[in-house]
Amino acid sequence: MAMHTEMLYEWFQAQGGSIDTSSIGITEFPLYGRGGVALRNIEAGQTLFSVPRELTLSIRTSSLPNQLGEGAWKQFGLDSGWSGLILCLMWEEAQGDASKWSPYLRTLPSTFDTPIFWDEDDLCGLQGTAVLNKIGKNEAERDYTEKVVPAIQSRGDIFPADAVPQYYSLQRYHIMGSRILSRSFHVEPWSSDEESETDGVVQAVGDSAAPMEIDVEMPSAESGFTVEPGEENPENATEEVEIAEDEEDDDSENPADVAMVPMADMLNARFGSENAKLFYEKHELKMVSTKFIKAGEQIWNTYGDPPNSDLLRRYGHVDVLPLSSPLTGEGNPADIVEIRADLVVDVAVNALKNQPQERVDWWLENADDDTFVVLTDCEVPEELVSFVRLLLFPQDEWEKIRNKGKLPKPKVDIALLFIIADVLRRRAQDYPTSLEDDELLLAPGKVEELSLNGKNAAIVRLGEKRILRGTLQQVQSMEEKLRASMAGSKDKKRGRDSQNASTSVRGKRSKR
Image 1 (cartoon, helix red, strand yellow):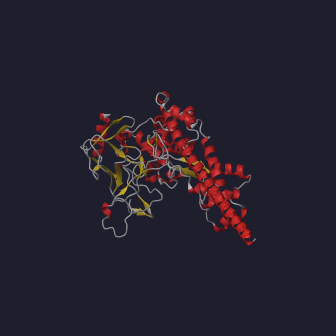
Image 2 (cartoon, one colour):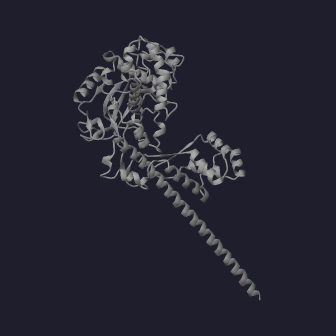
Image 3 (cartoon, one colour):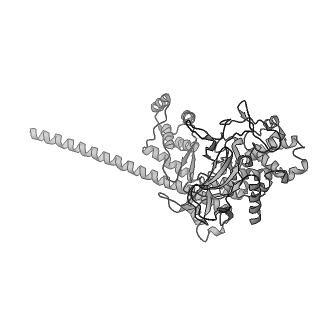
C-alpha cells in the first residue's frame, strides 16, 4: 500500500494538486480500511490538500464525450442518469497510461461488499429493509444493455472489439458504477478564461479534443458558486462540496455535476465524526479541517450521516454506535424505518370496510408523499397521522377537507392510534426474523458465526425493528394516556351530574 500511496502522491502533485504531507498520511484502519491519518496536531481551518478543477474526473473533464460527439452522446441516452459517467470511467481505464487519471484509477477498489454484488441467499437477509428495493441492479443492467452497449458497438475506433471483454463488460460496468456510488462528489460547474458561453451552455475544456457543448441544466454559466448581493470578492468565494446522491435519492441530480475527486475519496466517514470537509472555489477544491485533530487520529470526511440501510447500499458497511433514549443498545442514531402508504391503506380498509381510493389519490396529489419515515426518536410522523385522519374522516368531513385543499391537522384519537399501532405491527412482519432473533444472532459468541454480509444485514434489520417497537410503545403509551384522560373526564362529569342531582334533591327537600 505504501508504494501505491507514494505513486498517488507523485501523480497528484505532478498534475497540479497540493497536499500537506507533514499533516496528513494514508494508512490502514481496522474495520475501515484505507483512510487519512493526522501525522501531527492539526488546527481547525487548515487546508490538508487542494485539487485543481480539471483533475476531477467527470463527463465535463473526460474527453470521451467529445470523441463520441454530442449527437451520439444524446442519441444513446448518455446525457441522463449515470451511464455516461460510468462509460467515461470505463473508457479512461481502457486507455491505460494514455489517460491522465490512470495512476488514480489504479488506486480505486475493484471489489465491494455492497448488496448489488450479493447472492440471492444473502439478499434474503435484507427482506423488509429499506435496502432491497433500492439496489437498482436491474435498472443498471437495463441502462448497460440499452445505452452503453449500442454506444460501444457504434464506434469500433473508440471502443476496439478486443478491449470490450476486459474493459466494457457488464461486471466492469457494475464495478465502475459502485466506485461512483461510493466515492463521487457533487461539484457544481465553474468557469475559466478558456471557457465560453453559447446559448446558456458551458463549454468545458477536455484533455485533448476540442470542447463539446453538453446540453445539461446548469445553475449558472458564470461560476460554480452563488455570489450574494454586496459580496465584494467572488474570486475567493468558497462553498461546501456535497457527497453525490444517486438518482433514487434525487431525481434532479445533474449527471454532469457528479465527479470523482482524487485524494478526497481516500478519506473515510462515520456518523457524527466529521472533522474535515471538501470546499470548492473557482479553480480548485480544498479539503479543510473543521475542528482540531489530534496526531494519530483518523481524518473523517462527511457523508451527511445516512442510516445503515443507505450506508450498506452505497458503501458496503454500517455504523454501530451507542443509541440515545428512547432506544437502547448500539446501532446507527440516523437509522430510519420507511412505511409505505399502501400498507396504511390496507390496514385502514380492513378496519373501515371501505375503499378510500379517491382520498388516496387526493393525498398523493396534494401531499406527494407515498412513504412515511420514522426516526430513532420513535415519534409518529405528523404526515402519517394526517394521512390516517384523512382515511378515517366521515364523508362530510372528507368533502370539507377536499374543498379547502388543506391537509388534515395531525391530531390523534383512540381510533387513529389503533390503526397506526396495527400498521407498525404489520410493518414488523415484513422481516424474515424477529427482533429477538436478530439480537441473538448479533450476541457475543454468535456474531462470529455470521458472514460479513449476514452480519451487516442483521444490523440493518435490528436497527429498523428497534424503531418499530419503540414507536409502537410510544403509540400504546399515548393510547393509555388518552383513555385515562377520557376516563377522568367521565368521572368528573359523573361527579358533576351527581352533585347537581344531590343539590336538586336537597332543594326539593328544603321546600317540603
